[in-house]
Image (cartoon, rainbow, N blue to C red):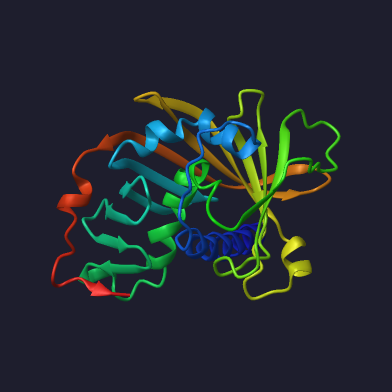
Length: 260
């Protein structure tokens, strides 16, 4: 079991890390017309109200099995180009689009780039559905027998980001709120190999912050087309969510921080 969890976590880390690089290469396009499911999801998650704010801050504690792999505060602009991550021990990561800078004690940490992008990507996922290069199949169905949620498949145009063959399957309720999202990653493998090892993140326990819903509980699962969510492999607890003013104007990377 320990080996299985380790392998699953390794796949998840590769998947989400690669996907983060792709996300940050796209720009958000806001369309106020609610005539597509992706726009309905964004509207249900109050995208415009979200983007009216400069930045959002939250604490994230992530564990896989019995191991906590991340515990820090993340403050990120609502357009996702700037971020500051402060660990409980005081170490910091600064993100400026594709560049990251770390406090001296983190220079030898091999996971900093993964942590710099992954958790904020999952947090911002409902607001990234209309990025340039996205392709939606709104009639997509899985083979699950007992699924009552709406499904749709998100893929990407050629040359979009790092891995245009990646895809996502969104699951939403009748109010168009995300319940969970399945995905594959093709970086370093063929599409067939990636599709043999899919995962999913489940969003729950939504909290309303200034009229915007945020999932405060995350669960990571193994997933397949026939059964949907199967074995749980990780959990995330999201707390102290709040919008922040003047983060962009005050953003400044300390001179002694090292670029990774």
